[in-house]
Length: 319
Picture 1 (tube, rainbow, N blue to C red):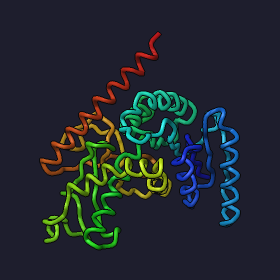
Picture 2 (picture 1 turned 90 degrees about the vertical axis):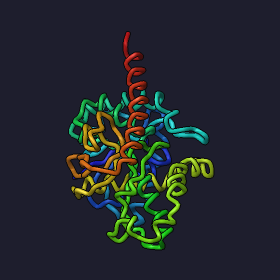
Picture 3 (picture 1 turned 60 degrees about the vertical axis):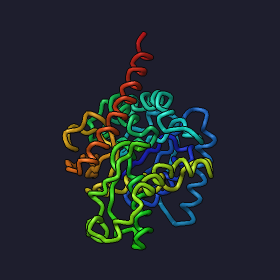
Picture 4 (picture 1 turned 45 degrees about the vertical axis):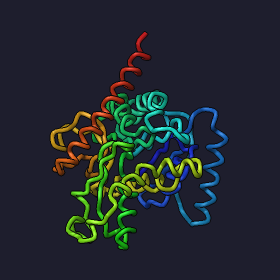
C-alpha cells in the first residue's frame, strides 16, 4: 500500500498533479488535502476523480480531508498550497506570505508524518524547501522541491526542436534558482550521447534566446491563460513516479546541498540528485568556470531571500 497526499489539492496545479499521479501504478491510496472551508470543493473534486476512475477501470482508494491528522501514514506529501503567482509577479514576491503557510504545514507534517517524504511545489520553491526542511525537523534527503526539473525539461524541448531530434535524445540540465538566475549547464548537454559542443550546428545555437524563453515560460503562460497547470503537474508526477518506483533516476530538484557543486552549499537549490524511496541525494558535480560563477550568484540570491524569510518567521514567532 502506497499513500500519496496532496496539500493544496483545490488549486489548479494540485488538481492536475493529483490526476496525473493516479496513473502511477505504485499508488494505491490518495489523500486530497485542503484548508477548512473548502470541504464542498474537495468533495466535488473527489467525486469527479472517482467518475474518471470508473471510466478507466481504475481501482484506487481516494479520500479528502482538512484534518492534518489524516496525513499520517503518507509515503510522500506534496505541498502545493499557498498564494499562486499572478501576472507580473516574480516568484520571490510570494516569499513571506507563502512561508507562513509552509512553516505551519511542515511543522504539522514533522509531528504527524515524520516518516514521509516532502515534495515542495509552492513558490518560491527553493526558499520554501528550506522553510519546510527547518520547520519539519526532517532529514535533508526527505525534503526536496520541484526546483529546476521543469525548467530543464523546457530547455530540453527547445533544444530538440532546434536540432529536429526526438526529445528523448536530448539530455540537459538547469541548476540554481527556479527563477531569473537559473543556470543552464551547456557543458553537461548531449544529443544522442554526443556532447552538444561537438556538433557543428552548435555554433549557431541561439543559447541566450533559448534560456530567455525558459525563464519567461511560466510568466508567459500565466499572462495568456491565468496559470501554469499541465507542465508542472506532469513534472510533479514524474518525480513521484521516480520516488515510488525506487528508480534511482537523477533529476534536477531543489535539495539541500553542502559542498557538492564546487564547494558551494548550505542552501536549498536546484541540483542533480539521485531520487528513490529514501529521498533525494545530491550528486557531486564539476562544471565549467563560467557556470560556477553563475551558480554562485544564483545561490547567493537564494541565500539572501531565505535568510530574510527565516528572520521574518522567527520575528513573528517571538512573543
